[in-house]
Amino acid sequence: MHLGNSCNFLILSALLIFSGELSSKTKQISYGIEEYGQEKLLSLQGFGIVKLQGTKVVDSLEVNGELDAHGCELGRVKVNGYGLLENCLVKKRVVVQGVLEATNTQFYDQVVLASEQTIFENCSLAGIQVRESGKDEIVELKGKSIVSGAIKFDSGRGIVIKGSEVEFSGKLIGGTFQ
Image 1 (cartoon, rainbow, N blue to C red):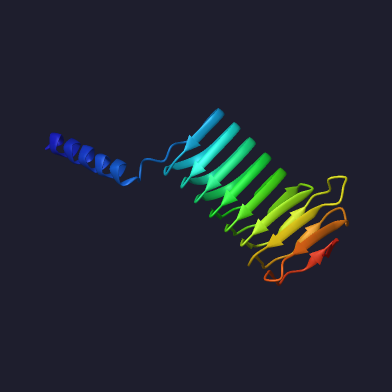
Image 2: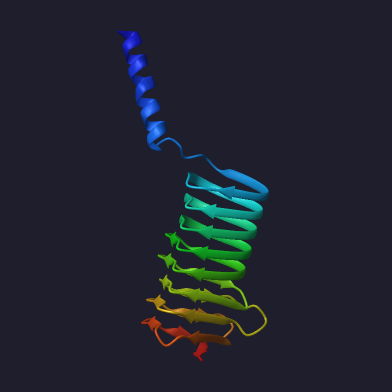
């Protein structure tokens, strides 16, 4: 009887592993150029270039260097450098110190930027805060982007370049439309 319980446990474990339930890895740290495919990670910290294709990062993603993400589902995101997001779903807060270009991406929480220029094309955003950089900060909204919350420029010198199809229902604080 004891052996039967062990066998049942092994069979159940194997089924869970193959179904992807236990395939989540704990915190991954990468250096140099790292590529991740359709896998599920609890968290990822990258130093260098991190390329994600269909990857799910449940808790947090932090990149010091360059992030190139396509078709990903992400939790909290922090980028120090350059971030490119295409066809992604970002469920938690995003903080970028550098450059961010996003296309066809949904941001469910606040996007916080320390950047002189950021581009969102066909994106859905809960809100944007732009920290002071010492120069005029520019947020470019293209295509059918939708911003439901506020866009706030801490410097008071912000510029929003808003395309003709962009929907903005929030409040613009510290900036002007162009």
